Image 1 (cartoon, one colour):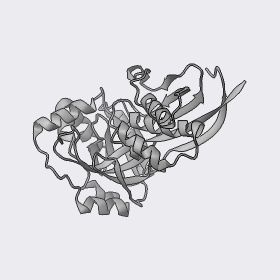
Image 2 (spheres, one colour):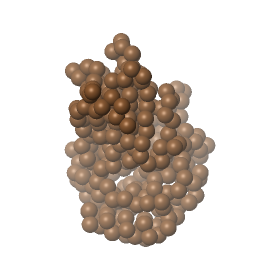
Image 3 (cartoon, rainbow, N blue to C red):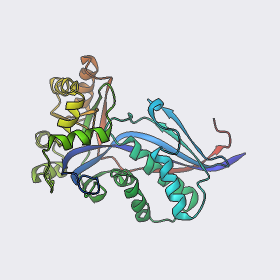
Length: 306
């Protein structure tokens, strides 16, 4: 016997530029950032279930909560509450985005859960209503709903789409994990922030032009000093990427993944190969940045589907 299911492939994100302001009274930090969606996806499937739950497969899932604290499950519950129904759904998440790596895998899964559950429960619910729920879940979830390239302000949830060409990057997954909360706490200790963070016009212009040579010198992550202070080995990974021929590099978000900008797909492959041989990271993979947002497919799955 089969039942309807909705599957969503949702991309990781990279902050090409991230300016972070001082901690606000509400506990959040204002940011000015440029998000870009990467060709590295988690897949979220939602199907009706008499016994709701969450099942995880894929990379490094041992450290991911499989209970009601998981952000994707919280997203399903939040949407169900908005629709006045029970969250009678089984969420299956196949993870390909590294965990606790500064690539917003948790936010991607939450966005995927919102989209997949909407498809099951109320397909005509406007995306704008999902965005309101996404902002309640986390600062990166709104971008995970739309993908592409966008400027984020406020906490990162206020988005302006940027019609930017795709760029080619290499992600180098350094050892260990970093907690976003811990990185922000160390950032606060460094006392380098202002109340009104702003990215330079030159960075935005380089992104819009899709010019990697111009952008390489503009890459910015205000959280990078805090991440490096907590994980000094990141200096080795950053140095190895530049030695491998990357145009520029930075820690991705709160880390510990590092991202390296390249001239194009062939150059990205060369940099990834050199980084893989360097011993400075667990693995290195070429990706495209600025890819389209989540893609939803409706199909069927068996009730006991494995």
